[in-house]
Image (cartoon, rainbow, N blue to C red; front, side, top):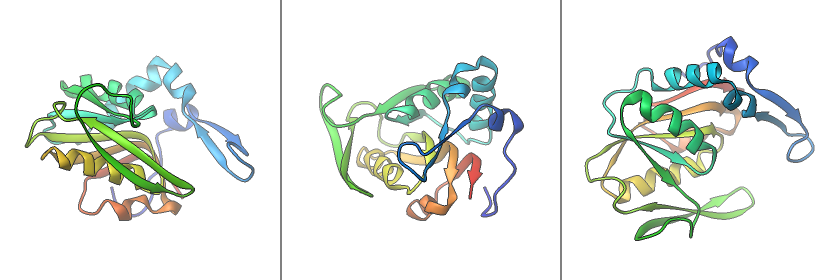
Length: 178
């Protein structure tokens, strides 16, 4: 996607509820619950997010709303889905990463046998904001010697410049918000 924002599809704008002052005063939260609740809008979302994806072997979604996106997109591409979870949620051997958030630290894990070496991965999530969580997810995939060939999100908060943490990656977001 180019550096200038494009007009989002009307069905998407109509399917996102704006919630002022959530989770704290001054924040305008974009609630995707109406999107997931609409079979028509969620189907359109799957089509739009899968569009333009080159060959992909697996879709990987980031906890928690990335699971919703990933489970829509993976069947559309005819591939499986793999979750990236918060620490302690996955059985078996995992690769882990800790990363800094705006207010503290967090972590993510991925099962070591979930993705084979050389696999072409599409990473998905609901929102791209600062890019910290997505960059950590890219690192986990790379620890398994797989390649992130595409990143897709429903919304991108451009003012937070998350793309700058993900250079040389095919990133496409359905709605880029300044």
